[in-house]
Image (cartoon, rainbow, N blue to C red; front, side):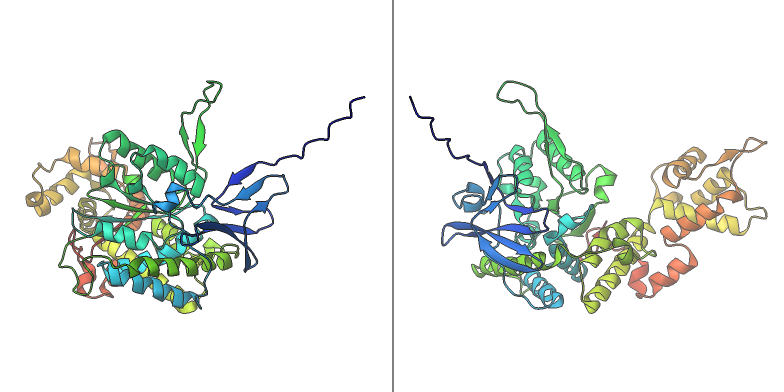
Length: 462
């Protein structure tokens, strides 16, 4: 009789992995040591950590790090730390980040601070559901690429899109590595490529909105795949995006509007890469210590700020334990809010609101006709516009820009009633023309009541 063959040992599938958070709360992070031609895992639970070559899951699957021969790693398309390194306090780490950015990039002091906090946020971004983007805007030779290389090299698993010949691989790289996308809009010149970039940006600031792409299975079956694109992003562009909702997700700095600081090197030295690696190692330890900490965004909110700014700064505030650093960031958010209100105060809507405010002050019953508003607006601002100031255009601005609802009275005139007063009070504050808003702007001195010129070194556009 032929003996029964011995059963073959069960082989569990191996899954190349850049990072993972297990059900136990354990954090798995891949590190890369090119000199040793080696990749490893760092495993961390409750702040303690150790190295390992693989991680076996209860399901029988085995997580393994990507090969050190992977082209994305060999050619610096994706940058990783080489191992955790002690950094001291959060405040000391933040100071090192800020010093590194200041040495190699010429941006305004305000944006330098924002970029430093954004680096920290990128390392624990997956603890949040919504994220802002960081952007620099300017022409060729304005320093955009230097900013991307310097700040990007400190962010969590930076993915440099210039290393991709087309947009198509970006979806797979983002889904596999779940890192920070570093992208220069100018790298993608074709309209369909730019449309794909916009798709990544539109879906990538909030968790739970993957991008669906057509795939065909081995059996020729149509099987669309969802690619996760959620994560921090650094963007360089020459102009604005047409989508205003997308524009509002950016914290933006205008580049190249003044002479380069004398102490900024024209070419990056070799020490730049070494410094960046050392900081990534310290930031890896920051992630291991801080990712699992409980945090409540509501506690970080400042209700005096614009809702969009609260959405942007609340995650940043919640990651900082140091009391001094938290207060510095809160003041930074207030300054940003004041600049935003000051900027908005020079728009057509603000001019229109000033006219409404002044007419309402002299109205006996609080009712204003659109004709009266158009007449006073034309008297004050006709020379500011090439177009004719008409009642129809003013009515359009009232409805579409300020969301006010004129109604037709019994004599046929369109009227804004006194019932719109609460909405108007909010708009006065939003556009910086209420007494309280003007007093707050005046706290920063004369410059706070001026619109920073578009493209000036101090201008930051949200």
